[in-house]
Figure 1 (cartoon, rainbow, N blue to C red):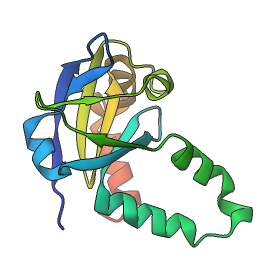
Figure 2: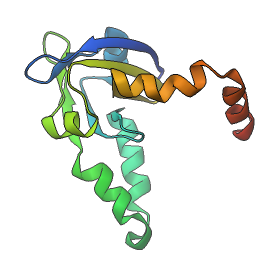
Figure 3: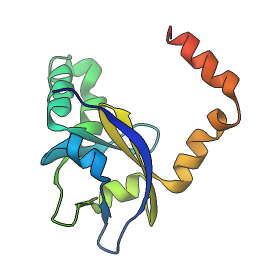
Length: 144
């Protein structure tokens, strides 16, 4: 299945750790999906087929070189469903990891969704927002 997870959305977390998943992203994620620790201080939300791809890649790697990355992703993995109100629950340990308290930014990044604390998202983007040369340089390094 092709995933086209894109867009930036601002939401709040309620007192129980729930947030509304944007409708456009809900459609792409499906009924069940996976949430885990992400890179750079965010959370990754992956459609089940994308989690299966990652899982298959990690399973085939030798333990000598993959044990830390396996612990990072597998220990925090949680299966998610969207409730009748379009919300997902972000477990406490994952909220703590991503320093999520109230305001979050939900970002579609092609094959996954990232959930950021608003503060961390703003920090992460500061270098790109003010410096198009940095964007151009990174695109060049990627061969784009």
